[in-house]
Image (tube, rainbow, N blue to C red; front, side, top):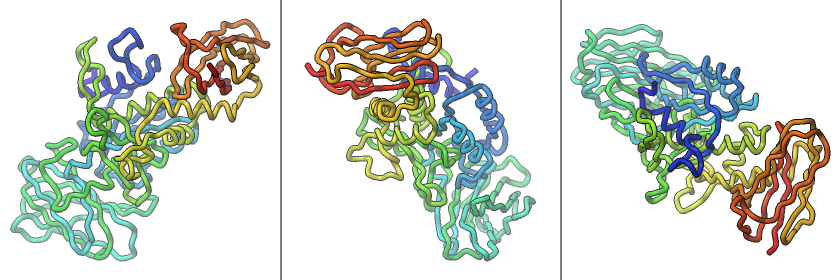
Length: 465
């Protein structure tokens, strides 16, 4: 059951419906899905182990991974976690990894400040607050003191113990990532638990006066937005884990039906360690997809959770064209084809720009035509350029069926033929320059694409009317 009303519309965006049959269909209809459902009832919330699910997906032969999860507390945010390392290993093994950047930018839950200045957190209504402070490695010891309203400073523990003082229970643990980032985890509740944690809570740092400290928090009454807030809110460095993985194709969100600018909620980079962290933007607002509880109905859906599935659908189409497509090449094709306009000048917000699926397919076809991995298919066209008809000649291997398609320069499929199993050998099919409706297509550049099993080849065609 989709109790959250989340996974169903995500699935609809990727590949729901049937073209020309349903009112709407997803980006890649017919794609096969593997689903793993998460809940957020553990403490702290938004700290969900997914390594076993990734291993399961790999064992089932998944080609593309979409992780619809964004977390920002008790994580290093520098790409060093076990999950992020595992994602890198899966990418090296050939999987494509797509992760939405999260909706934290307008959530009031990230701040940055100099250690000498300290910070404060306004709280009201929450009975549990979780905090992470992050900073770069230094030789000097760092102390953190928390001061409740009208009270005395409380030394925040660093050894995983809990200090009970002035009606508060304060847990603290200090750690360091494999990439050197220091992290102080804190859990604050009343003593006894169950009351509201009153603020503001002041935090003073000793030992890192000139260093930048990043603070993240969440509480037990909020999702992406909290009525509690830091004294100074910072919208940068709000890409959430695990989109912070080195291998993740990180996706921000914009509204194509509005002014085309980035959605205010959409997290953006750079990463906490300064590394660029956004690859591409996709539609996040104004999206309509499959209703999660009423079969046959549609529902509004949005956020970067709606943007990520658009990119996954594009990755599935690219993988269909190029069976050997890996994470690095998919990222390159998506970025190469990204659209630019008056909004997309900041790569920390937009990465390479706005998702352009046809352009990415065109780039993939051009790449296949120029660098075919399977020259033994010997796909060729004559005459080329042609006026009314072109002969497409090729060599099949074994009894496996094949498909020959023709795409426009924009990546639209205009014609296709399935070639049934019939043994290896030379074959020839003719294309008369007409689309699947039998109507003549315009002059211009086209690509013929042949696929037989895991083999593929492509050739450029020039039609002259």
